[in-house]
Length: 269
Ligand code: MF3
Ligand code: CO
Image (cartoon, rainbow, N blue to C red):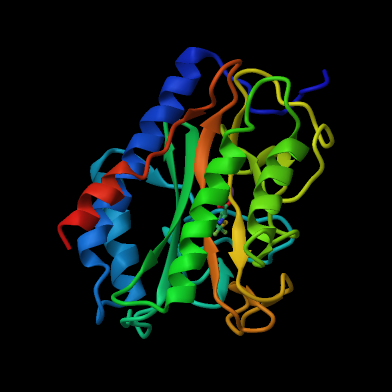
């Protein structure tokens, strides 16, 4: 009963998560042409919810009850701008402007199974430091993913992420972690963004996890934003966040979500 409650699935169940992940990945590509100065974050949320429902799936964040929170989450997307790390609330009064970095985080539920993904976009022209932050966080995600092999430890993932981030003198969030994902959006085990090789918990074959480094330019400390939901850097420095849903395999990890639709769409904007 070592892995009781963990999302370890049959190939058939993994195929459903992959289908949810495909909808989610295409959603991100679909959003790209809308990520222009002047659009409100509430409009983005509406576009995303419509897309997901048209695909016959459900927005998994909407109505989600996070542990230790009073209320359930009311939107399809988390939209976190600049110093916001996670859980930025869509608002009809908040508009994208050139120079911002914008993290979109979203979950999709299909036939009772979930996929989870996040990507940080540069809106218009951003500072060289912001551009570097996005590159480093994106690469840190892939360094972590490369460790997600059966028999490895969550500490191997966290170590790969944090060592890479530290080499650029950026800070990785210790309080916010990745997680198992499947029949619920957040399942055991936690997948920390820091760790030591061979420590943490051992990863069994066919475990489905979300790996999601959040990286800050300044201090690693975080604080709650004024809306009660958003989490921001305490020192106000920029934060980025990339996330994929991944299956632990004996050989190479299988990445179920994809940034390819984003890349294709970005070529045309
Ligand atoms: N951002 C979280 C994750 O990727 C999930 C969002 S929780 C919600 O794991 F409350 F915003 F729905
Ligand atoms: Co997640």
